[in-house]
Length: 339
Image (cartoon, rainbow, N blue to C red; front, side, top):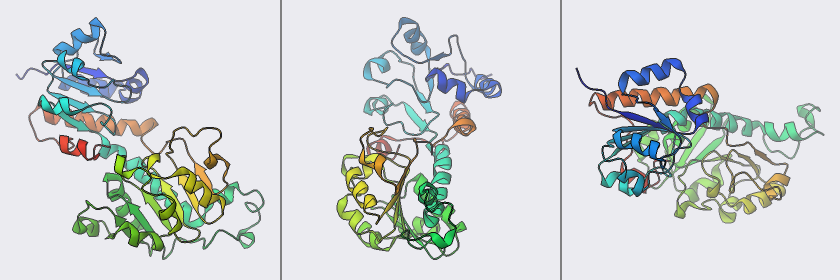
């Protein structure tokens, strides 16, 4: 009988309560050995270090401390990190791969609700629903009273996706449900054939901007993508276009976006901002053409169970030496593709 590998669960208290109900905790215990205490939210006390020294695999999520060199030194048996959330960018670094430790992420599972939110935002953008709902003079006046919002339609519209990430790819595929929609993708690393299979067409960002009614952002947060959509790019968008951002707030120049929306020319639906949360005096807080939600597109509530199930499946594959399906390599990490 194969011995179960010793594991340590590392995440905040609120995370472990969200991830592990009794059936999922039972399933975890069937795959790995859980010594007491099996969970911690820190790795620096003597008790935590003693558990870390025995662990062959860490199951991590929100609230897990970064795996620094000193913490890795305290984990000589560590062979894998299974992350039950999205990005591992703040959790792991080059030292992890240097030691041959394998890393997986539940980012694919977390992409599901983000793509669903994005699709809803795109459909609402077509009708300008959030902005009309906030317009007290017009919200109750009937469609005949509406002006200054452009064509309130989701037929024969063009949607531009900046970034063919795991979320961008899902959004492209989901857009097929909107009749007559053309989907364009701008991503210098994307394969044109894969984009075409998703129902979209690969173009440059410069080519895309003047054509789109909705611009949806799905690029990683890197130094070179900061303010990827700045004043110049926003000026090239057609009148009444909507910017949707469910990726990272830093992709957009917030001041430039606020100015365009204040003019009445553009609209924005933002689930992420830079900084986050927005300061009280942020220009984006003052603009009627902007809808901001508090970073809710990702997994929340029962959706977190999908992340747990994903990691439990991956953990079972790893423990039985089967191929992993969501492994993050150092190359992925360096390119920001672990986000």
